[in-house]
Image (tube, rainbow, N blue to C red):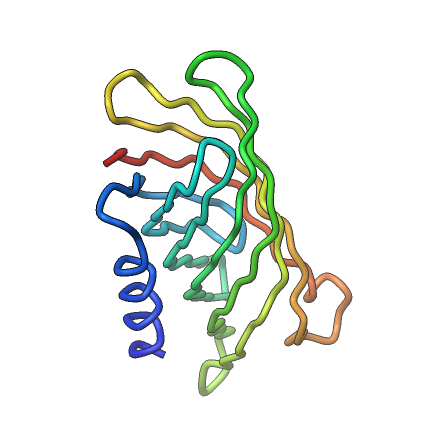
Length: 165
């Protein structure tokens, strides 16, 4: 998994042109527990871009312990509202490893996750190289690790801070 993530990041970074615009920073989310993601956006034009996020979330409640690592890619179409403010929407995919342990269990249970996601949000690009964004990323797990219907849903809500290159 580590080699796959490094390869994806390398292809993403090297795939751009010398004058391409990049946004890089952090996406702090709340979905499957509190999480943080390293977030990169490659701007193709004023109207579209690609976002790649490498994330980790955790949840420790009473007798339940959860750790979730993810790689998410989403394509965005952007739409201006007023100068600096725009909204975005687009499809994406997420792969991840979910590890959970209940107190009393002898070992953690680990599940592979593959999900189809969508992303919608609003962002503000300041006159200086800073971007702030709020977004929602709902989706459905295509493999479904649990026995309940709710085990198929994937979601996160996030606040992002990125530096524009």
